Structures are given as C-alpha cells and as structure tokens.
Length: 270
Image (cartoon, rainbow, N blue to C red; front, side):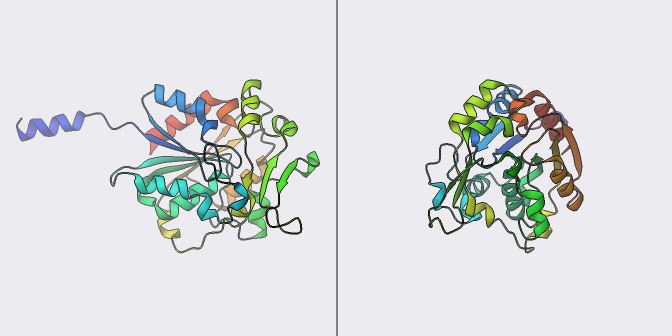
C-alpha cells in the first residue's frame, strides 16, 4: 500500500471502544454494576469492575484494613496493569469517589475522564470539618441502623460498618426494583471504617490530578449522600460538567438505562 493510501486508510479506521472502569461504594462490590456492565458490553464497550479490598469476592476481613491505600490497592494494581498507551474512563459510586481521587493523583496519564456518580468528591479527602460534613453519610434520622465491628476493642473507634438489612432498602434502594435490593441485601459486606476515616491526600500530586477532567452525576432522591452534600462538594471543587439523574442512591439499579446513556455521552466528549 502506498504511503498516501495508508494515511487515508488510517484516518478512517474506527477508534478503539472506550474502556470503562467501575469502582463500587462502601459495602458494595463489583457485582453492583451488573446491569450497567451488560448494557455497555452489549454496545461494544470494554468494561472492568473492581472489587476493592474486603469487598465482593475479596476475602479480606474489613476489620483488618486500617489504611485507605491498602483498601484501594486493587484499583491501584489494575491501573498499573494497563498498557502504556491505554486511557480509561473511571467511574466511582458513593465512597468510590475517594478511590477515583487517589487514582487521579498517581495515574493521571491513564485516565480520560473521572465520573463521580452520587459520589464523595473531595480534593484532599477528609481533611476539614467541612469535608466530613459533605462527604460522610449521616443516617441518624433513621435511628440505630448500623452494625459495627470493634476489632480493636469496644472502647476504640469502630473498625467496620454495615447498614442493617432491614433498613437497606428504605435508605439506599427505595426507587430500585425489589429484586435488586434483595440481591444487595444478600451480597453487601461490612466496609473498613478505619480505612475510610484515613482517606486523606496531600497536595504533592495535585498538579497531575488537575489534568484529569471530572464529571459529576447527582442523584436527586438520595437518602445516603444527600443532595445538599453533593451540591456543596460540586461548589467547592467544580467539575467540568454536572448532570442530574432521577434516582435513589444507586442509579445502577434504579435508572441503569439513563446512567448508561450519560456514560456513553460522556465517553464521546472526552
């Protein structure tokens, strides 16, 4: 093939389908993305869903994890395994937003865009009282809804936390199909409380992190990360774009088609 013909052929070659990498929220696992993964893969996209340490199929005891770096290691290992020239779309839900923020600091060159879905979006993690107010769920209005683990002793800070099964649907999945909330009640696991508490990042890699465009998807009827918390985080660290979705805390259950439509649109923009 002549050089000119080769250049013309290369110019019309289809681009590689976007590679989405999904990170779950606290207590959930890679399994929670099953609807979204099916929809995207059936449309030709590449999809990877990560189990963070102690979540999903990972057998680590959540009570044994004290550092956020350790909790997030499966995502770090995945990013390290990517080919040199591959750039992915990172999607994080709920506390998974903190995992995205850490990944952005170390792998900016491998991330096309970071998408926060009803997620904790804090530039430095939990550094200030305002960070805690914006990013930590407050379910006190529901009463005693947590099962706590105390590996270090009952007089110490809890080492793991899980929402009691009888409260999970009304708090997390009130707009989701019953079968999804049933599945979630069977698969949810305690999350490592100390690791989450220690999610704090310094400014050392902030310049690299700022190279990654961010998109935020707000969930309107969220009982976990309430709308005012999401809006405060958006004001304090403005993303490139913000979208709104009519869903509970888990749009991958309650509005998977709308969520997929947004993700495909975002992928075409970045």
